[in-house]
Image 1 (spheres, one colour):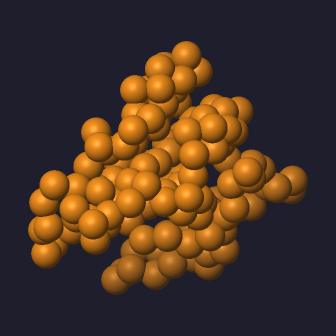
Image 2 (image 1 turned 180 degrees about the vertical axis):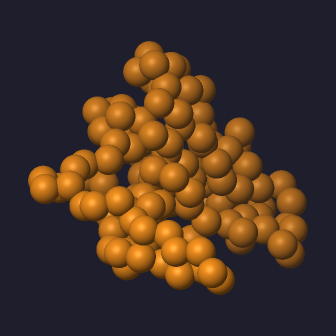
Amino acid sequence: MALKTTPRRGLTEAAGVVDRRGAASSALMGRGSYPAAVSRGCHQMTAPPLPAQPTVASLRFLWAELTTRCGLRCIHCYASAGPDGNDGTMSVADWKATFNQAARLGARTISMIGGEPTLYQGLEDLIRHALGLGL
């Protein structure tokens, strides 16, 4: 499974998100197009010149949304998790492959989120795998 780059809310710095459905995204703050100069009040800020060759930023952080299962039904939950949630379509093997790819891309940290990630059946195996990768 290849990580695809798509916009996603709530990301800062170089971060990637893979949700329980296998949808992947990453966001790089400070990258992309920007005006050569930005005017703020009476101060003029000039952006640094773009490099002659495009650069590739490495992935530093991965959020892995393992499940939407949760024992609670909070109305403010960003994941819309609850007792009726599920583990999506990604198997433990899919998650391991995603973690391997994230490590190759430079990730140093993985946060396993959900709903309630401790309800995910393969959580212990995924934690061992991530630790084995140095994440």
